[in-house]
Length: 143
Image 1 (cartoon, one colour):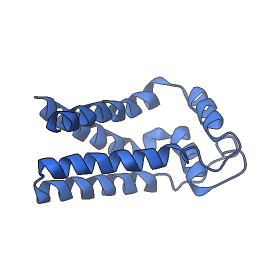
Image 2 (image 1 turned 90 degrees about the horizontal axis):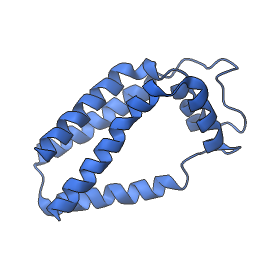
Image 3 (image 1 turned 180 degrees about the vertical axis):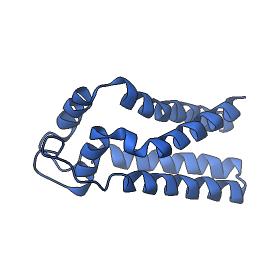
Image 4 (image 1 turned 30 degrees about the horizontal axis):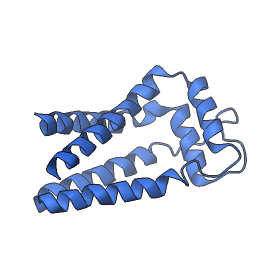
């Protein structure tokens, strides 16, 4: 089970490290087109994937609990991650112009998604911290 947890964490971390690359490599027009297709007249693009991700997270936590985790370490990671994501979202409080705004129907998360794609650099500090922590953790995990 330890090996399964390590492999799942390694794959998940590697995929998460691709997000900043996605912002850097793909131009805004391409990211916007992909976002338009993902939402396709809906208010959510993740209604199917979110429940799967929740189950996946519960599996990871279950495997970690079985393995054993130091409580202060787990709590630090949880709280730091929550805080980084909260501050990341706060960077997108600037209203979108007409060209950046999502097509209807609107929802808060849809507007946030379009804001992030329009200006991913607004949360550059948070993305950099997340990427460094992910890379360091992945390196430590596999070393």
